[in-house]
Length: 136
Length: 136
DNA sequence: ATCCTACGATGGACCGAGTCCAGGTCAAGA
DNA sequence: TCTTGACCTGGACTCGGTCCATCGTAGGAT
Image (tube, rainbow over all chains, first blue to last red; front, top):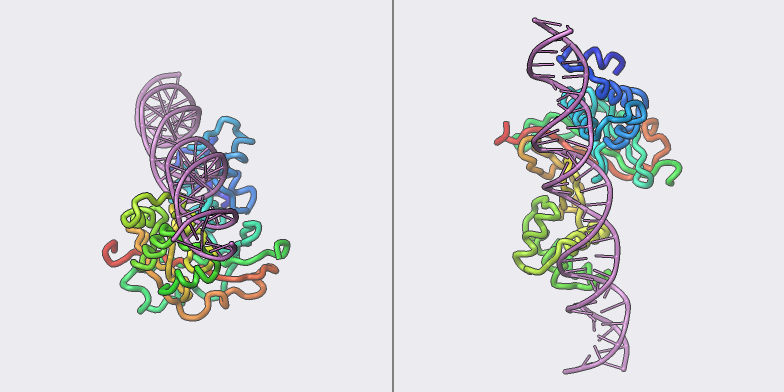
């Protein structure tokens, strides 16, 4: 997401200091942060940033397709800056660690027409679950 | 889930009227209800049943493997009485309708060893998203 | 059939994630 | 530099879910 800010400006985004730090936080670590974690990290750079702004900015980035929302558990949604390359997620049932993975083939292809019930199927989201090496 | 109550009793479950109605509600309609919807339907049969009891009973049924929990959106968890046959879900992005679907092949097989990072992968959960015929 | 007791039910307080809103602020074009 | 509408703020609010002290009862023991 190198020139993300440039792209966003080109799309008519008003680039504010708040939006800049949110983008920087996501850009910095390639992990899967919750909105709250983004808020904490953003606040380290810009003390007065509000929670609502972080939520708004994240939603906008998702709507623009620059960030993906992943909901691997029933808890807080996580934000994945790696929206460009299609990938799936491998989640540890013990500690919650999330890794990006690339299964072979297109998961959509596994769903035959007879199992589509007239739906226009757009995407397949796969969550692999198991235990990571340190949770054995 | 015909003789579910019998099986539960065999596992040391105390069969109360509350647990009975929750099981009946799930058994009745093969849809994917939220805890709250289960509560409403259960209350039609047993007016005084509490929300906490419905939540407890659902969690126990999930722990016993008799019901599956599905979290297709970031909102309320849904409970799927069809835990016996492995299947995946097709969700309408418009109205939220959920259908059970059976993709060909084992989705786990699509994840090569080199993409497992030492995890002991136990299951793959696939959510297909698209628009249903009435939401085109 | 009755008693006992541990397991289960209750409901109201509480919590965390997320949304909403009225009012104040400021990025960027003129 | 001015103007203005897009944006930010913080606090109230909603919704899904959990916790807990207390009361009730299923079902084994007698």
